[in-house]
Amino acid sequence: MTVRSGHDPESSQVMDSLVRVSFTVIALLSQAAAAHDLSLTQLRVLAILRDREPKMAELAQYLGLDRSSVSGLIDRAAGRELVRRDTSSDDGRAVRVSLTPDGRRLARLLTDEIGGLIRPMTGNLSPADQRRLSVLLNRLID
Amino acid sequence: MTVRSGHDPESSQVMDSLVRVSFTVIALLSQAAAAHDLSLTQLRVLAILRDREPKMAELAQYLGLDRSSVSGLIDRAAGRELVRRDTSSDDGRAVRVSLTPDGRRLARLLTDEIGGLIRPMTGNLSPADQRRLSVLLNRLID
DNA sequence: TATTGTTATACTCTATAACTATA
DNA sequence: TATAGTTATAGAGTATAACAATA
Image 1 (cartoon, rainbow over the protein chains, first blue to last red):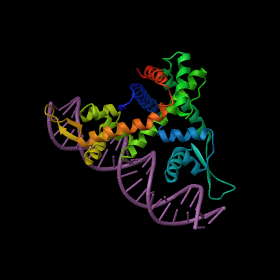
Image 2: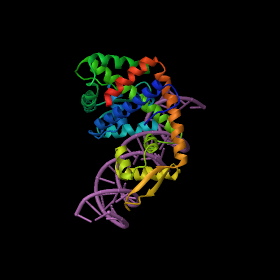
Image 3: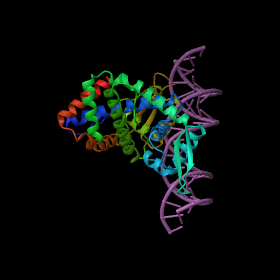
Image 4: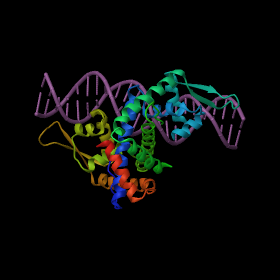
């Protein structure tokens, strides 16, 4: 995936390295997920639910997916006992999703394994360069 | 997607920003592809074929997919006249894949549109910082 | 026999449209 | 009526296994 477009060479080069690194990182995440028979999307579900117990519509919002797609995702995750559906007490229509103990354990394990996969890349940099990279990356998304 | 693991804080922070930026970049690429009714994988196919005319097995290698999956991908891309299959002259079993003129036009257009989507992010950085970021990112993957 | 590519099959992911139940 | 969620359906992406053609 090369991004060439008739602009400043700095701009093209940084876009190019960004895209290449992004594909690499996402491939590592997918690999970690696949090792536990999870898709990248299911990995995202577990990551989101680590810090939240959203309603279905909120989860769909986080994931950027249609509510109907999330129904299927949660069906399959619940079938594996990774997540649980609870009907809301205040709104009889709403369904709140949360991690089961198994789901939380797997989420933690995945976090560690992903760290192990990415660290070989970042380990090429000195701690100071890691800080610099982190600052520059954060300025891209803040 | 947060990567926490009991190591140096620099290491965790850079991994975290890497993952977040990677998701953002991949989402932009998917968005650019979707605007032309392409999946991220089909976008990758077009990008790979810009510089190569691989055999099916080689293309599968580049994509990291099974040959059977690539058969379907190329079926659909060929159905849209974006790519062409040619039987190899030297090996009667092999099939060589290449972009059609339409495919090449679309690949070029996508390159420009992706640049337009990513530049707002990188535009926050000075040319000097862009160079620094590029150097640091390249050290992750070289 | 081994390799290249395709096909058959099955499953996940995703969206759209139609539906149920609740507000 | 409007909203939350599910279901039905369809299509893309993916892998595994079985196959035909060629080496």
